[in-house]
Length: 470
Ligand code: SAH
Ligand code: SF4
Ligand code: F3S
Image (cartoon, rainbow, N blue to C red):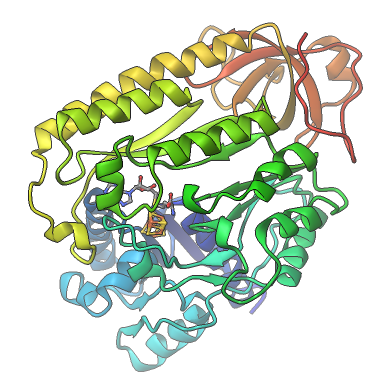
């Protein structure tokens, strides 16, 4: 088994939770003799890990499957498995649209994939497993030693919030929290493999443990903050309605908790927020932001927006633009509203026409681009602690193809910093996973550029993550 050389390609579409699942799928197949390869054409088994959040994401799934149909025609022994949120949503219907698929497995059946592969091979017939098991979590397997600096840990599955536009509660099931002992063990496994930064994943981490009567989220963060070798903790996503004062205080009190919060608001209009069933108002949201900034003045704030939700008027949209100005986000994600057949808003009347949605989205991005660049410019001249990720991906256009003096990492506020190694740091052997002080020298729309501060000791261990003015 160990030496067999079957090849595997996992194609992941969707959110970080899917990225985590995709990694676990790949690691879970190693004991069966599968080795990952870089392209689908070279694989004996292709796993398509799908997303149903918007129509476009779903279309991507079926167009990728269309590509695979051609491969399967050439190589009938190719095995195709479809997992994730579209698999959960469509179940058997995947097979009627794509009859060459061998396995359909849902969001809570990931651990069953090896068994399903064996069944499909033995019976020569497709297998479908989309039950909503109560035991929601995949058995976690750590990466190879030294493989990466940052890792994800899913701490919750599903969602109980039922925002009216959203497909997640139906495709990921009801909310479940991973017990704290399991989270701690998983994070320790990551740090033993050299991971220095973890991002905890859940649809609403603020309600962590509530249903099961486990510890709450700030307590979990407190325990993680003590783990040896872990330098940085991030999390996503936080629902504004449940953002507690204790979580806000954690940004002030826990040195390893990064100074960044992703706090999706979706709209700046109370009327639309109500129709979305978000359960907070603009005023409540702004109050949370103010408290966050009082507790932690440096905190970076990012958000998600939906443009053109059913019934959104020009005036509602103006309120969205105005809240973007008022909060002054570091960056944001925004999407045109997309009808999801299983979500209540699909049946709302007064849908906004596509060209209006597109125009609103464009105005929203224009505004945010200006704000992001201004935020980045304010960092020029400051020294930021950067967690070194690896050699810079984008090399300077005028430089050699791969310049070993170009490195990249992120600040506590999650901004990408590309930096040039000075002779001092070259001798210090800067390597992925180290925290080093970098003076920011230039600001761009999506990144910063800087230079390490000579002679400053690299940071490690129990020290804080604060950014200091130069
Ligand atoms: N649990 C997270 C969001 C997960 S989905 C939260 O509550 O914030 C990620 C983002 O996709 C959402 O924040 C929303 O902005 C967007 N989204 C979800 N459903 C959508 C839809 N039907 N149309 C357009 N955008 C959508
Ligand atoms: Fe979807 Fe709302 Fe749950 Fe987020 S909180 S996953 S937007 S239902
Ligand atoms: Fe998509 Fe499922 Fe994530 S619908 S956004 S992959 S939870």
